Image (cartoon, rainbow, N blue to C red; front, side, top):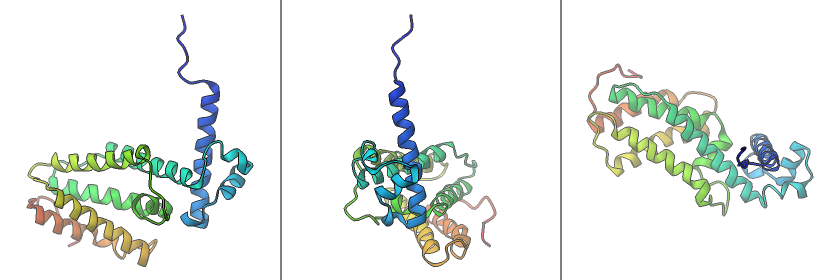
Length: 205
């Protein structure tokens, strides 16, 4: 006897429509800026009348919320699959490089994930959960490294320092490498502060 389907065709159609709307929203954000995103522009992008769009997203902030959740879910999924070298110092370099490359690949996505550029927007608990999961995963991978005794302040320092490289790169040399080329030196300074042995060549002599 066949079991009861867990998802109807209407559910699948609605989910597909939401994915299409989200993809269009990112395209509009890349074209007009995150703050320039409008539901009308997104509706035009997918060939939908604005009232129909409201059946999927009740407001622009609801759309931002879904975009925030999608971005952090993608980050967490990719980070979970990231293979790190056994050498602790090299692994710290790998974690830093992964974040910087992800953050510099898409400006609107980075702004929504890591900066407060949308007035009065606060992600819902459901959408905030993937970002918490990603941070917990990062801390867990740090603590799994041999010889790393990680305190909360160490995590804060790493996030602030590596995030600063991203911010400086986007602000002063988008598309270049003026600041990202210094990432290796920065991570070595952080690794020195954590007391990690130098067992691999430094990235930026």
